Length: 348
Image (cartoon, rainbow, N blue to C red; front, side, top):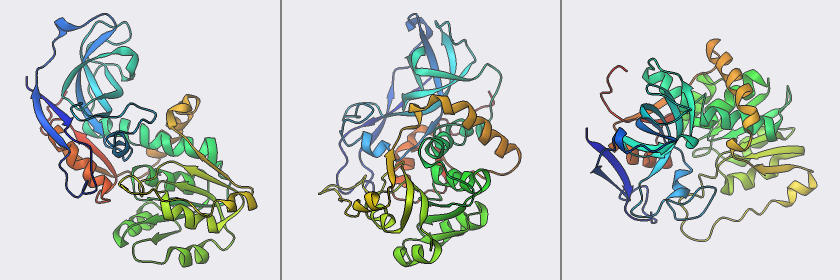
């Protein structure tokens, strides 16, 4: 079995991701069951999640994870199948999720994994769902609302990057589950049409072709109660001019800043937080494990009732993972970007 592996070969510069030259795909040795130690499993990595925060990981900055440095194998969340085990937690044939290397096969400690299915088969859509609505994207949206946003019925919720992986779930939770007035912000008429016609937002602002300040005044005359921020930068600064008393701002992402190489944008309108007695708080979804089960139960119920629409932007083959990340960072994706590790994956 050949074992593809994706490595970072240099730190991204100002040309990235327009010039996508920071990764290389190589063939590495394939680990075997005989190499396992106690508490380890041999994985076949099946489906990978592509997330905007990876841009920060490859910058060399120390965050909540160690940075990916040139020469290192890239990593990210994936759904994997256990091929062999010396673990008391997992057995051969189990499906697990965890942060793994961008490689087809690897040996890893069982402490880094969580069970998603005990044996049997899973199809592609199920695999994607463990990374999307039932995984990092869905839980991020749910945890953001429950831990910080706390939307109340009838309030106005504004969501940036509303057509993205987290944004599309946040729109539908705010509209259907929390019963709020929902305004999305997205780039381009096609994405705004999707946010309004498919996701059910009351309206959507095309920030690339419309005046954001003017449209916010029109659509939120009584101010914004909850803002789910996936963008940061100048957009966040403008939002601060439209908050109302006791607004809750959920800081989820800052994709507008990820590719900046010069002086970072400085938010100027933060005194509005004081005047409006507002809250602005960042979070990471895994800080709130107590919300995982209720979040997954809520989202599962919405999926069963046809109340949650999810799009997947599938990259076929692990070698396409760097292209998937560049596509996401350029805003060219349509929905959750996932990688199917083997383009012609056989029925499991």
